Length: 446
Image (cartoon, rainbow, N blue to C red; front, side, top):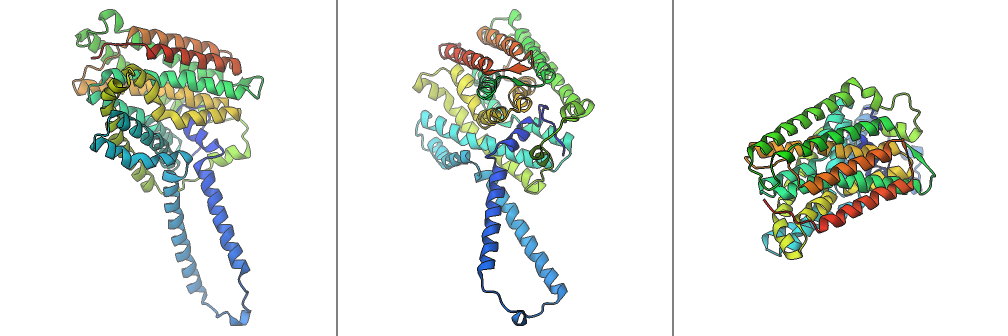
Protein backbone atom coordinates (compact mmCIF):
# COMPACT_ATOMS: atom_id res chain seq x y z
CA UNK A 1 0.00 0.00 0.00
CA UNK A 2 1.26 3.44 -0.87
CA UNK A 3 1.71 5.62 2.17
CA UNK A 4 2.47 9.30 2.47
CA UNK A 5 5.07 10.97 4.62
CA UNK A 6 3.02 13.87 5.95
CA UNK A 7 -0.11 12.01 7.03
CA UNK A 8 -0.95 11.80 10.70
CA UNK A 9 -1.87 8.13 10.81
CA UNK A 10 0.96 6.38 8.96
CA UNK A 11 3.81 8.69 9.96
CA UNK A 12 5.04 6.54 12.86
CA UNK A 13 4.96 3.34 10.80
CA UNK A 14 6.98 4.94 7.97
CA UNK A 15 9.40 6.54 10.41
CA UNK A 16 10.15 3.18 12.04
CA UNK A 17 11.04 1.74 8.63
CA UNK A 18 13.46 4.56 7.90
CA UNK A 19 15.47 4.13 11.08
CA UNK A 20 18.65 2.25 10.18
CA UNK A 21 18.50 -0.11 13.18
CA UNK A 22 14.95 -1.23 12.52
CA UNK A 23 13.82 -4.76 13.30
CA UNK A 24 13.18 -5.55 9.63
CA UNK A 25 16.66 -4.60 8.47
CA UNK A 26 18.30 -6.55 11.27
CA UNK A 27 16.18 -9.57 10.36
CA UNK A 28 17.10 -9.32 6.69
CA UNK A 29 20.77 -9.09 7.59
CA UNK A 30 20.47 -12.15 9.82
CA UNK A 31 18.67 -14.15 7.14
CA UNK A 32 21.19 -13.07 4.53
CA UNK A 33 24.07 -14.14 6.74
CA UNK A 34 22.38 -17.49 7.37
CA UNK A 35 21.84 -18.10 3.67
CA UNK A 36 25.46 -17.20 2.85
CA UNK A 37 26.73 -19.57 5.52
CA UNK A 38 24.63 -22.42 4.12
CA UNK A 39 25.81 -21.77 0.58
CA UNK A 40 29.45 -21.56 1.62
CA UNK A 41 29.15 -24.81 3.53
CA UNK A 42 27.64 -26.50 0.47
CA UNK A 43 30.43 -25.21 -1.77
CA UNK A 44 33.11 -26.48 0.57
CA UNK A 45 31.86 -30.09 0.38
CA UNK A 46 33.63 -32.47 -2.00
CA UNK A 47 31.87 -32.47 -5.36
CA UNK A 48 30.62 -35.80 -6.68
CA UNK A 49 31.04 -36.93 -10.22
CA UNK A 50 28.04 -36.87 -12.47
CA UNK A 51 28.11 -40.62 -12.80
CA UNK A 52 27.65 -41.14 -9.07
CA UNK A 53 24.51 -39.00 -8.88
CA UNK A 54 21.34 -41.02 -9.41
CA UNK A 55 18.79 -39.60 -11.79
CA UNK A 56 15.68 -38.23 -10.08
CA UNK A 57 12.38 -38.03 -11.92
CA UNK A 58 11.41 -34.46 -12.74
CA UNK A 59 8.00 -34.67 -11.01
CA UNK A 60 9.50 -36.07 -7.81
CA UNK A 61 12.15 -33.37 -7.85
CA UNK A 62 9.56 -30.57 -8.20
CA UNK A 63 7.41 -32.08 -5.42
CA UNK A 64 10.40 -32.27 -3.10
CA UNK A 65 11.38 -28.72 -3.99
CA UNK A 66 7.83 -27.46 -3.27
CA UNK A 67 7.75 -29.17 0.12
CA UNK A 68 11.14 -27.73 0.98
CA UNK A 69 10.10 -24.20 -0.01
CA UNK A 70 6.89 -24.55 2.01
CA UNK A 71 8.75 -25.65 5.13
CA UNK A 72 11.32 -22.89 4.67
CA UNK A 73 8.50 -20.36 4.23
CA UNK A 74 6.79 -21.38 7.46
CA UNK A 75 10.14 -21.34 9.22
CA UNK A 76 10.80 -17.78 8.05
CA UNK A 77 7.29 -16.71 9.10
CA UNK A 78 7.78 -17.97 12.64
CA UNK A 79 11.25 -16.42 12.68
CA UNK A 80 9.68 -13.09 11.68
CA UNK A 81 7.01 -13.48 14.37
CA UNK A 82 9.69 -14.07 17.00
CA UNK A 83 11.74 -11.13 15.74
CA UNK A 84 8.81 -8.77 16.34
CA UNK A 85 8.86 -9.81 20.00
CA UNK A 86 12.60 -10.09 20.59
CA UNK A 87 14.31 -8.43 17.60
CA UNK A 88 14.98 -4.97 19.06
CA UNK A 89 17.23 -3.79 21.89
CA UNK A 90 14.28 -2.51 23.95
CA UNK A 91 12.88 -6.05 24.04
CA UNK A 92 15.41 -6.81 26.80
CA UNK A 93 12.89 -5.25 29.21
CA UNK A 94 10.51 -8.16 28.55
CA UNK A 95 12.57 -10.03 31.14
CA UNK A 96 10.78 -7.95 33.79
CA UNK A 97 7.37 -9.49 32.96
CA UNK A 98 7.44 -12.40 35.47
CA UNK A 99 8.94 -10.16 38.14
CA UNK A 100 6.15 -7.62 37.57
CA UNK A 101 3.48 -10.24 38.27
CA UNK A 102 5.44 -11.67 41.18
CA UNK A 103 5.91 -8.23 42.75
CA UNK A 104 2.17 -7.55 42.59
CA UNK A 105 1.15 -10.97 43.96
CA UNK A 106 3.82 -11.16 46.69
CA UNK A 107 3.33 -7.57 47.92
CA UNK A 108 6.90 -6.41 47.30
CA UNK A 109 5.82 -2.82 47.73
CA UNK A 110 4.28 -0.14 45.54
CA UNK A 111 7.67 1.14 44.32
CA UNK A 112 8.71 -2.27 42.95
CA UNK A 113 5.30 -2.88 41.38
CA UNK A 114 5.23 0.55 39.73
CA UNK A 115 8.72 0.50 38.21
CA UNK A 116 8.72 -3.17 37.13
CA UNK A 117 5.42 -2.75 35.31
CA UNK A 118 6.61 0.58 33.91
CA UNK A 119 9.62 -1.09 32.26
CA UNK A 120 7.48 -4.03 31.11
CA UNK A 121 5.13 -1.73 29.20
CA UNK A 122 7.98 0.00 27.32
CA UNK A 123 8.71 -2.87 24.87
CA UNK A 124 5.03 -3.87 24.67
CA UNK A 125 4.16 -0.45 23.23
CA UNK A 126 6.81 -0.90 20.54
CA UNK A 127 5.69 -4.47 19.76
CA UNK A 128 2.09 -3.30 19.43
CA UNK A 129 3.22 -0.76 16.83
CA UNK A 130 5.05 -3.46 14.85
CA UNK A 131 2.04 -5.77 14.73
CA UNK A 132 -0.16 -2.85 13.70
CA UNK A 133 2.25 -2.08 10.86
CA UNK A 134 2.25 -5.73 9.74
CA UNK A 135 -1.56 -5.84 9.68
CA UNK A 136 -1.67 -2.52 7.79
CA UNK A 137 0.66 -3.89 5.08
CA UNK A 138 -1.96 -6.54 4.25
CA UNK A 139 -4.57 -3.86 3.54
CA UNK A 140 -4.97 -0.91 1.23
CA UNK A 141 -4.00 2.67 2.04
CA UNK A 142 -7.32 3.58 3.68
CA UNK A 143 -7.70 0.52 5.91
CA UNK A 144 -4.02 0.75 6.85
CA UNK A 145 -4.51 4.35 7.93
CA UNK A 146 -7.54 3.37 10.01
CA UNK A 147 -5.57 0.59 11.72
CA UNK A 148 -2.77 2.98 12.62
CA UNK A 149 -5.30 5.58 13.79
CA UNK A 150 -6.99 2.98 16.02
CA UNK A 151 -3.94 1.33 17.55
CA UNK A 152 -1.51 4.26 17.32
CA UNK A 153 -2.25 5.33 20.90
CA UNK A 154 -3.61 2.04 22.22
CA UNK A 155 -1.31 2.02 25.25
CA UNK A 156 -2.43 5.51 26.32
CA UNK A 157 -6.08 4.47 25.90
CA UNK A 158 -5.66 1.27 27.94
CA UNK A 159 -3.72 2.96 30.75
CA UNK A 160 -6.21 5.85 30.82
CA UNK A 161 -9.24 3.57 30.97
CA UNK A 162 -7.65 1.41 33.67
CA UNK A 163 -7.02 4.52 35.78
CA UNK A 164 -10.54 5.80 35.10
CA UNK A 165 -12.16 2.54 36.27
CA UNK A 166 -10.11 2.76 39.48
CA UNK A 167 -11.36 6.33 40.06
CA UNK A 168 -7.87 7.79 39.46
CA UNK A 169 -9.36 10.70 37.53
CA UNK A 170 -6.50 13.06 38.42
CA UNK A 171 -4.05 10.54 36.93
CA UNK A 172 -6.18 10.20 33.79
CA UNK A 173 -6.30 13.95 33.21
CA UNK A 174 -2.61 14.38 33.93
CA UNK A 175 -1.52 11.50 31.67
CA UNK A 176 -3.62 12.78 28.76
CA UNK A 177 -2.35 16.36 28.86
CA UNK A 178 1.14 15.12 29.80
CA UNK A 179 1.35 13.02 26.62
CA UNK A 180 0.55 16.13 24.59
CA UNK A 181 3.16 18.21 26.44
CA UNK A 182 5.73 15.46 25.92
CA UNK A 183 5.18 15.16 22.16
CA UNK A 184 4.57 18.82 21.46
CA UNK A 185 7.49 20.28 23.43
CA UNK A 186 10.07 17.63 24.31
CA UNK A 187 9.92 15.39 21.22
CA UNK A 188 9.42 18.17 18.69
CA UNK A 189 12.09 20.24 20.45
CA UNK A 190 14.58 17.35 20.28
CA UNK A 191 13.78 16.89 16.58
CA UNK A 192 14.49 20.56 15.86
CA UNK A 193 17.59 20.63 18.08
CA UNK A 194 19.39 17.46 16.97
CA UNK A 195 18.32 17.88 13.36
CA UNK A 196 19.65 21.43 13.36
CA UNK A 197 23.05 20.63 14.86
CA UNK A 198 24.45 19.52 11.50
CA UNK A 199 22.41 21.88 9.31
CA UNK A 200 21.97 25.61 9.39
CA UNK A 201 18.27 25.34 8.65
CA UNK A 202 15.64 22.66 7.98
CA UNK A 203 12.34 23.01 6.12
CA UNK A 204 8.99 21.23 6.31
CA UNK A 205 5.43 21.43 4.98
CA UNK A 206 3.97 24.41 6.82
CA UNK A 207 0.41 23.65 5.61
CA UNK A 208 0.28 20.27 7.35
CA UNK A 209 1.85 21.67 10.53
CA UNK A 210 -0.59 24.60 10.63
CA UNK A 211 -3.58 22.28 10.21
CA UNK A 212 -2.43 20.14 13.16
CA UNK A 213 -1.91 23.20 15.36
CA UNK A 214 -5.39 24.47 14.45
CA UNK A 215 -6.89 21.16 15.61
CA UNK A 216 -4.94 21.39 18.87
CA UNK A 217 -6.28 24.93 19.34
CA UNK A 218 -9.79 23.51 19.01
CA UNK A 219 -9.04 21.04 21.80
CA UNK A 220 -7.86 23.91 24.02
CA UNK A 221 -11.27 25.56 23.59
CA UNK A 222 -12.87 22.32 24.83
CA UNK A 223 -10.72 22.50 27.97
CA UNK A 224 -11.58 26.15 28.60
CA UNK A 225 -15.37 25.74 28.19
CA UNK A 226 -16.16 24.08 31.56
CA UNK A 227 -14.17 26.50 33.73
CA UNK A 228 -16.64 29.43 33.94
CA UNK A 229 -19.51 27.18 35.01
CA UNK A 230 -18.02 25.65 38.15
CA UNK A 231 -14.92 25.58 40.25
CA UNK A 232 -12.48 22.76 39.65
CA UNK A 233 -13.40 20.98 42.87
CA UNK A 234 -17.15 20.75 42.13
CA UNK A 235 -16.79 17.71 39.89
CA UNK A 236 -20.34 16.51 40.39
CA UNK A 237 -21.82 19.71 39.01
CA UNK A 238 -24.24 18.75 36.24
CA UNK A 239 -23.30 21.73 34.09
CA UNK A 240 -19.63 20.74 34.06
CA UNK A 241 -20.40 17.13 33.17
CA UNK A 242 -22.83 18.06 30.42
CA UNK A 243 -20.52 20.65 28.85
CA UNK A 244 -17.54 18.25 29.02
CA UNK A 245 -19.48 15.40 27.43
CA UNK A 246 -20.86 17.66 24.71
CA UNK A 247 -17.36 18.98 23.98
CA UNK A 248 -16.01 15.41 23.89
CA UNK A 249 -18.61 14.46 21.28
CA UNK A 250 -17.59 17.53 19.27
CA UNK A 251 -13.90 16.63 19.42
CA UNK A 252 -14.60 13.03 18.42
CA UNK A 253 -16.74 14.23 15.51
CA UNK A 254 -13.85 16.46 14.43
CA UNK A 255 -11.52 13.45 14.62
CA UNK A 256 -13.82 11.46 12.32
CA UNK A 257 -13.78 14.37 9.87
CA UNK A 258 -9.98 14.34 10.02
CA UNK A 259 -10.05 10.64 9.11
CA UNK A 260 -12.28 11.36 6.11
CA UNK A 261 -10.09 14.30 5.08
CA UNK A 262 -6.79 12.40 5.19
CA UNK A 263 -7.93 8.99 3.99
CA UNK A 264 -10.60 9.85 1.39
CA UNK A 265 -11.27 13.38 0.16
CA UNK A 266 -7.70 14.78 0.29
CA UNK A 267 -5.55 11.67 0.49
CA UNK A 268 -3.46 12.82 -2.51
CA UNK A 269 -2.20 15.71 -0.36
CA UNK A 270 -0.74 13.24 2.15
CA UNK A 271 0.46 10.42 -0.12
CA UNK A 272 3.53 12.26 -1.38
CA UNK A 273 2.22 12.63 -4.94
CA UNK A 274 4.54 14.66 -7.14
CA UNK A 275 7.49 14.35 -4.77
CA UNK A 276 10.62 12.62 -6.01
CA UNK A 277 11.62 9.69 -3.82
CA UNK A 278 14.93 8.00 -3.31
CA UNK A 279 15.41 4.28 -3.99
CA UNK A 280 15.26 3.54 -0.26
CA UNK A 281 11.94 5.38 0.12
CA UNK A 282 10.43 3.53 -2.86
CA UNK A 283 11.58 0.24 -1.37
CA UNK A 284 9.94 1.18 1.96
CA UNK A 285 6.62 1.95 0.27
CA UNK A 286 6.64 -1.34 -1.69
CA UNK A 287 7.51 -3.35 1.40
CA UNK A 288 5.77 -6.69 1.77
CA UNK A 289 4.42 -8.02 5.11
CA UNK A 290 6.68 -10.53 6.84
CA UNK A 291 3.89 -12.48 8.59
CA UNK A 292 0.35 -13.52 7.54
CA UNK A 293 -2.65 -11.39 8.42
CA UNK A 294 -3.99 -13.91 10.94
CA UNK A 295 -0.67 -13.89 12.76
CA UNK A 296 -0.58 -10.08 12.85
CA UNK A 297 -4.11 -9.95 14.29
CA UNK A 298 -3.21 -12.68 16.78
CA UNK A 299 -0.19 -10.66 17.86
CA UNK A 300 -2.32 -7.51 18.21
CA UNK A 301 -4.76 -9.39 20.43
CA UNK A 302 -2.05 -10.94 22.61
CA UNK A 303 -0.15 -7.67 23.09
CA UNK A 304 -3.30 -5.66 23.83
CA UNK A 305 -4.40 -8.24 26.42
CA UNK A 306 -0.91 -8.21 27.96
CA UNK A 307 -0.86 -4.40 28.09
CA UNK A 308 -4.23 -4.49 29.86
CA UNK A 309 -2.88 -6.82 32.57
CA UNK A 310 0.32 -4.93 33.31
CA UNK A 311 -1.29 -1.49 33.06
CA UNK A 312 -3.78 -2.66 35.68
CA UNK A 313 -0.89 -3.51 38.03
CA UNK A 314 0.78 -0.17 37.22
CA UNK A 315 -2.30 1.95 37.84
CA UNK A 316 -3.17 0.02 41.00
CA UNK A 317 0.21 0.89 42.52
CA UNK A 318 0.14 4.65 41.78
CA UNK A 319 -1.62 5.72 44.98
CA UNK A 320 0.75 3.90 47.35
CA UNK A 321 3.75 4.75 45.17
CA UNK A 322 3.00 8.48 45.48
CA UNK A 323 2.62 8.18 49.25
CA UNK A 324 5.90 6.27 49.64
CA UNK A 325 7.99 8.38 47.27
CA UNK A 326 6.46 11.78 47.95
CA UNK A 327 5.96 12.37 44.21
CA UNK A 328 2.63 13.97 43.38
CA UNK A 329 0.10 12.12 41.26
CA UNK A 330 0.13 15.08 38.89
CA UNK A 331 3.85 14.64 38.21
CA UNK A 332 3.43 10.87 37.75
CA UNK A 333 0.66 11.40 35.22
CA UNK A 334 2.16 14.37 33.38
CA UNK A 335 5.84 13.39 33.20
CA UNK A 336 6.38 9.69 33.97
CA UNK A 337 3.42 7.86 32.42
CA UNK A 338 3.70 9.47 28.94
CA UNK A 339 7.10 7.79 28.57
CA UNK A 340 5.41 4.36 28.59
CA UNK A 341 3.50 4.73 25.35
CA UNK A 342 5.84 6.99 23.41
CA UNK A 343 9.45 6.19 24.31
CA UNK A 344 10.26 4.30 21.10
CA UNK A 345 8.39 6.79 18.90
CA UNK A 346 10.31 9.64 20.59
CA UNK A 347 13.63 8.10 19.59
CA UNK A 348 12.35 7.31 16.10
CA UNK A 349 11.18 10.88 15.51
CA UNK A 350 14.58 12.28 16.50
CA UNK A 351 16.44 9.79 14.29
CA UNK A 352 14.25 10.73 11.33
CA UNK A 353 14.86 14.44 11.99
CA UNK A 354 18.61 13.82 11.98
CA UNK A 355 18.11 12.30 8.50
CA UNK A 356 16.48 15.62 7.49
CA UNK A 357 12.98 14.13 7.06
CA UNK A 358 11.23 16.90 8.95
CA UNK A 359 7.74 16.32 7.52
CA UNK A 360 7.86 12.76 8.77
CA UNK A 361 9.27 13.89 12.11
CA UNK A 362 6.43 16.39 12.59
CA UNK A 363 3.95 13.70 11.58
CA UNK A 364 5.16 11.56 14.49
CA UNK A 365 5.35 14.31 17.12
CA UNK A 366 2.49 16.66 16.29
CA UNK A 367 0.33 13.91 14.76
CA UNK A 368 0.43 11.97 18.01
CA UNK A 369 -0.73 15.09 19.89
CA UNK A 370 -3.66 15.46 17.50
CA UNK A 371 -4.74 11.85 18.04
CA UNK A 372 -4.58 12.18 21.82
CA UNK A 373 -6.44 15.50 21.92
CA UNK A 374 -9.18 14.58 19.44
CA UNK A 375 -9.55 10.84 20.09
CA UNK A 376 -8.06 9.57 23.37
CA UNK A 377 -9.31 12.41 25.62
CA UNK A 378 -12.91 12.33 24.30
CA UNK A 379 -12.98 8.52 24.56
CA UNK A 380 -12.07 8.65 28.26
CA UNK A 381 -14.81 11.23 28.91
CA UNK A 382 -17.45 9.19 27.07
CA UNK A 383 -16.39 5.90 28.71
CA UNK A 384 -16.60 7.68 32.07
CA UNK A 385 -20.12 8.75 31.13
CA UNK A 386 -21.11 5.14 30.37
CA UNK A 387 -19.49 3.86 33.59
CA UNK A 388 -20.93 6.68 35.72
CA UNK A 389 -17.50 8.16 36.47
CA UNK A 390 -17.20 11.97 36.84
CA UNK A 391 -14.52 12.32 34.14
CA UNK A 392 -14.71 15.90 32.85
CA UNK A 393 -12.68 18.32 30.76
CA UNK A 394 -12.50 20.69 33.73
CA UNK A 395 -8.73 20.46 34.15
CA UNK A 396 -6.85 22.55 36.73
CA UNK A 397 -6.60 26.14 35.52
CA UNK A 398 -2.81 26.10 35.80
CA UNK A 399 -2.59 23.18 33.36
CA UNK A 400 -5.06 24.72 30.92
CA UNK A 401 -3.12 27.99 30.82
CA UNK A 402 0.13 26.16 30.15
CA UNK A 403 -1.56 24.02 27.50
CA UNK A 404 -2.80 27.09 25.60
CA UNK A 405 0.57 28.86 25.90
CA UNK A 406 2.41 25.74 24.70
CA UNK A 407 0.20 25.51 21.60
CA UNK A 408 0.81 29.22 20.96
CA UNK A 409 4.60 28.79 21.36
CA UNK A 410 4.76 25.83 18.97
CA UNK A 411 2.46 27.56 16.46
CA UNK A 412 4.87 30.50 16.30
CA UNK A 413 7.84 28.14 16.00
CA UNK A 414 6.41 26.21 13.03
CA UNK A 415 4.71 29.17 11.36
CA UNK A 416 7.50 29.89 8.88
CA UNK A 417 8.09 26.30 7.73
CA UNK A 418 11.75 26.62 8.72
CA UNK A 419 13.51 25.59 11.89
CA UNK A 420 16.93 25.46 13.52
CA UNK A 421 18.58 24.20 16.71
CA UNK A 422 17.71 27.37 18.66
CA UNK A 423 13.96 26.79 18.24
CA UNK A 424 14.49 23.21 19.39
CA UNK A 425 16.30 24.41 22.49
CA UNK A 426 13.45 26.84 23.15
CA UNK A 427 10.84 24.03 23.13
CA UNK A 428 12.97 21.73 25.30
CA UNK A 429 13.53 24.53 27.83
CA UNK A 430 9.78 25.21 27.88
CA UNK A 431 9.10 21.54 28.68
CA UNK A 432 11.68 21.47 31.49
CA UNK A 433 10.22 24.62 33.04
CA UNK A 434 6.73 23.10 32.92
CA UNK A 435 8.02 19.85 34.47
CA UNK A 436 9.55 21.80 37.38
CA UNK A 437 6.27 23.62 37.89
CA UNK A 438 4.30 20.37 37.93
CA UNK A 439 6.71 18.86 40.48
CA UNK A 440 5.47 21.41 43.00
CA UNK A 441 1.83 21.45 41.90
CA UNK A 442 -0.55 20.19 44.56
CA UNK A 443 -4.05 19.44 43.35
CA UNK A 444 -6.87 18.32 45.63
CA UNK A 445 -7.74 14.70 44.80
CA UNK A 446 -11.20 13.70 43.67
